[in-house]
Image (cartoon, rainbow, N blue to C red; front, side):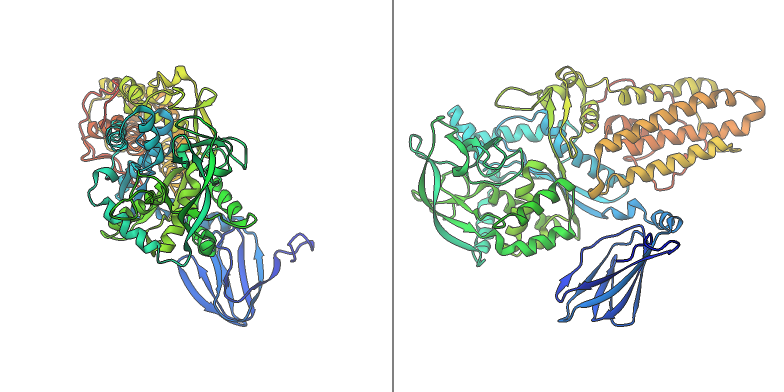
Length: 635
């Protein structure tokens, strides 16, 4: 490699590259301009959505920030010399041509992991994927894009059976009652669920899962094996997932069976240190059990290729890469469990009959729902999930899809979150260390709860909320500040009337304020791209909008009173009403109640619409006195 710094005054760098036969280079982009000069071989160069084959003595030009890869499908190496150079003005110009909105899907299926119906939702649950995914779906709708929000309840999870056993209830009754409560809480938080999968309430669920499970069994990677399994002799229970309690063999954190929430690594319950039974608390033993096992390494290369193409947050990608590169590769996964809670693998359940593993059931339910939704037309699937579920959704789900021939139903993007802690500890239902979502919503209203949780979104890190703050969420400065600014229009109208004027003469300040409204919108659009998604960053920019609009009114008020500045005053007032329109559209994904009220107050129909280049309100629009001080209920 020859870098531009190796020879004084050299305006470029160069490097020799070779793509081996039947391989594809890493898809990437950079700010440099680049040329490939082909020395030998033939390969397909992929530039964005375009593909073209190149051979010896041909030249390829790559513009800055253009994603590219080389796919060599031949039996010979593809040898090139790459010449690259940095031209910052060209790079900035190329970046300006990439509209963030163009990177967002025209039709999206927005999936969230179905909550386990073993109890109610607390603020820690809502702060994870559920409100963030609703924010994403709402933002797409403001752009006129199709977006369907899909979740449900994870009825056959082992945690439901454990909750039933500990309370002397029936698992189906627990799943039904708590599941109803979960969906009611999401609705109260303004989360619009377009499809809710409820396995125990769907009469077709068992037959659909058995049908898809039968497709899995056709894979050569599935075998029947006898293996030692964690077991409680006193309860006569096979211990897996929620039935097992111990410490992770990888990081030593407290863990249930099969997955460690702390490090995200899979395990087998029998390998937990200090293993005990969740039901009786006694130390566990092992016994040999027959089960169906999936060789995950059979699909390791396909999994790696799939994740190369999918958008994913860095923490998820790092975890999966480490799992794939670990000694021995991916551990096998048991597809069936010895339990009477779940979808039995046989129509006539006999003693000792196996049931489909809960996470396999969940994955097949996901794939079935995605298949049904995609029947209505092409769509990109974005999955919001907690980091602790990364293994199940980014490793197990794709492998099951490969085995069942349903890879077209996989997510195109993963958006993860970590945990919101209450004070210094994780929210915990079992330890009663929680603030319940229903209580917070009833006391503060959905807008205030959504804003407080999105501000503290645990994206890539653990975030915290003090109990006192969690029990009184309506005091967020952004929420209070926007209501104060909006009600301040009453004072503006007392002096200048309730009609929206047309623009007149423009000052430099007017021009830059208008530029700001458009550039801010583009920045917020960029934070919606799944690989760059940030609810916290979105709230930060809404904070800046509040400060800028408040300052604009304060500095423009004197100008509006000067008789000789009448033309400029018209522009000033038109811009302030435009800022209210911009606020309603940009804030609707976050605080839909207040935003919808503002949109309607401005005389605009339907729900807020987000423009890429903002148009002014029609001159003469009558807005009337604003009334936005009250905390709003569910939109």
